[in-house]
Image (cartoon, rainbow, N blue to C red; front, top):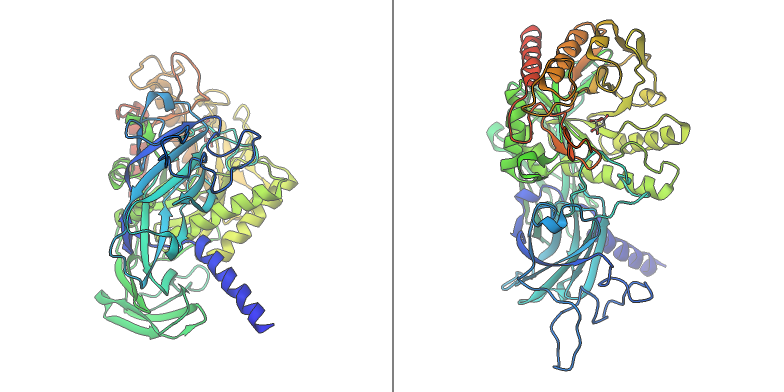
Length: 614
Ligand code: GCB
């Protein structure tokens, strides 16, 4: 019986090692597999299914994960990877060749690599920052695994016996077909960029390694500020492997070096910092933290702060903060492509800071890790969200598992990013009991994984002529910390003048946040302010909105208008003013600031002045 249990444990352990996320990838020893990959476009799924539409056997010579090199001259192989057809990774395929602009289906990516002089003491994982949407991954003809979800990282352990010194043959089938039982579902207001959209790496770790960790200020009493002298820090380390020595945590700048015992695969951490500078947007102080254990060593830059919804306010380090936000899609409008690099993040966050923002809502899915890391160092508060968007199949338990998985991966990746102040479990989901239960269970999962942050969701509100008192009363409001809603009064309902008499509130005794508001304008199109699509209309809309914001109730804690830049959306088909673009950006697709940009900038300047700190 014991042996049996042990075998189950080992098998389970192996399975876990293949699926559990390794965090803090930037500080690990790694080999980049970014760059050129050969590809085959496969709209008929010929590489995956046989002619009876059954998944091919692993050893099937016609399967596209197997070698394309004929062994004998009589061999017939009807596929092949060739330098004639290459795509760059990271990068969506849509912008790399005109034939991919609207493509939704499978593309096979192939890369060969060598692994000479590999230390036997190291385990090797294959890591992807993100692949949209489904990735089936094969190495040297063997399937390593499959992952669904276009915006979160995943990794597979490569068995020692599979890796060769020379000529490893890595194939990824990437499929970005939309599906009614996927997250998001078929219906989104953004471009469905396909491909290996983020970094690909081989990550080399010791036999026993630090898989994940968390370190943060211990929560003070409700509504209280954290202590900066003798500040209490707590957290944990999770190890992957068998033999454990003590773990050591160091914060050199604070002259901290402490040993902690390992129990099972867990280490529980408790530290007192004699004096600590708190992280905030005005002073984004980060400390180098070094964790060592069993020959593994990771280094991270961690900021210490607390965040909580308390009464009517959001408290950052115990002090009320007003969030001067902006929504951002992960897109470089000028190049019509997904953003992924540090340079891209600098451009987007730089624009947000130029506008006077202290907060960004990263819509509508987790963005690349460079974004949240840069937000840490620039001092920008972050709302991070999963693509539970509009109408997904809430009654389907498999869909719930998919959403939960993406939520888990988002939280695991960024749990140590002090910039992230709230997790969002979705956007504009319809009010009904099945959906509310689905969302409530996601919120429970988020709280279980991370009790240190707020949880929110962008709710919908009905707006009519503008005269009435609009109440946010969605039952989901009872489970979130921050009651957030999207409103477009003056764009989808009435004219901007309707704002003059509109009032907003919520039945919940919680802080209130406007997670979207916006109007479209074609950059460079000028007319009088009553003319739709003109910069003047959008400017008028913003003027009326900010006047309305000044009349918000006292639990109003901030706003993140929709949106920083124009973005691509196949839903937007006005042949003159849209042509496949959602033009609600304050910056157009050529990088030019529209008139409304200045209205929001002025408002934020005023708010910053009134609010003083933050
Ligand atoms: C919304 C959605 C956002 C859309 C936006 C719009 O409420 O949350 O994804 O792009 O409105 O422009 O209509």
